[in-house]
Amino acid sequence: DAKTTQPTSMDCAEGRAANLPCNHSTISGNEYVYWYRQIHSQGPQYIIHGLKNNETNEMASLIITEDRKSSTLILPHATLRDTAVYYCIVRVPGGNYQLIWGAGTKLIIKP
Amino acid sequence: GAGVSQSPSNKVTEKGKDVELRCDPISGHTALYWYRQSLGQGLEFLIYFQGNSAPDKSGLPSDRFSAERTGGSVSTLTIQRTQQEDSAVYLCASSLVSVLVTGGTDTQYFGPGTRLTVL
Image (cartoon, rainbow over all chains, first blue to last red):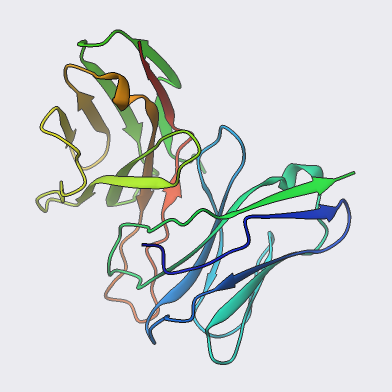
């Protein structure tokens, strides 16, 4: 079973920030939070990952709560091309390499 | 640099035929993974290769499925006597493995997948 829970779907206006929440209340101390997305008919795309500090890269920012039981992926200026299913996954690097996928959040960016 | 590539992108076959799916990982990546994704579903792990170690085949659904990785690079997933329930997108991923590095990660990077349709 997936160790994360995410909303089934979300809408966001083009140009606005998209904030995607993820609950991982049973996360263990050495598990990282990873985010991937899958655009229709394409392979999953890695976005970002983090342990406890907030992380930012060219694609997104990842905000992890102090207790690490939840996190938020932020796409700062969403475009139509960001429409995809976003997956939040927790795992230990070098540990169980089988990515355990939940249902993800279907993010729809509207013009 | 070049990402993970897979071929063919689409494969239509008749029930009972054998198929071979190919994956070219990112250069220098020592770990390679196969997953499959049925329509509207999440990814299902199939098999994992790491260097010269014996592969982890625990996810293969039946003995009709096999995979090999030659020279530590290219991998081929073979499905014998295909069945209609084998229809899915087959995804390959590769990663570095840096488990000995504190804080190191083995982020998986995926190819575009092969869509297999068994008639």
